[in-house]
Length: 173
Image (cartoon, rainbow, N blue to C red):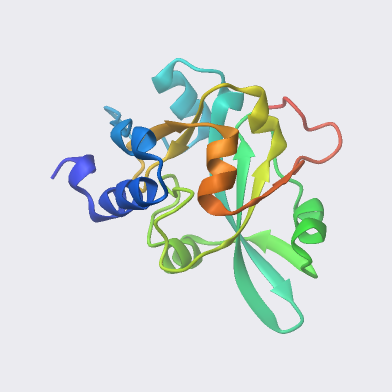
């Protein structure tokens, strides 16, 4: 089975088309090898690492409740979990393990797309991505990516644009 035939990739393609982003759906590429990091994706595509939209799932805790938080971050820096918590109105934001990620997205770490999840996720979209005319996001499988824009990510996810990097983190791989 090719990565384009993978159920998670098909779900992402359908979500893109349904959202009126057929160009992005048609632009899904299957790469020769898995690209589980922004640096690997950038190297495979020949683009700056900052033009990669990392789809990072975090555990957001508010009171006794725990939910998934999706942060679409520029591959050029790291998200600040304290800042993410403040932006999401959570008491605490922390790392999510592979089981938590798959349970909330239906996709594996390294292939998490901005859409195609079992339920809508609270999403923050890194404003640093607006610096790039084209950004690349995972398409539901570690070998698949698609082209989009910052505005396309915000519209697609209903996400909140935000500066998600901590002080001194901008532009740092």
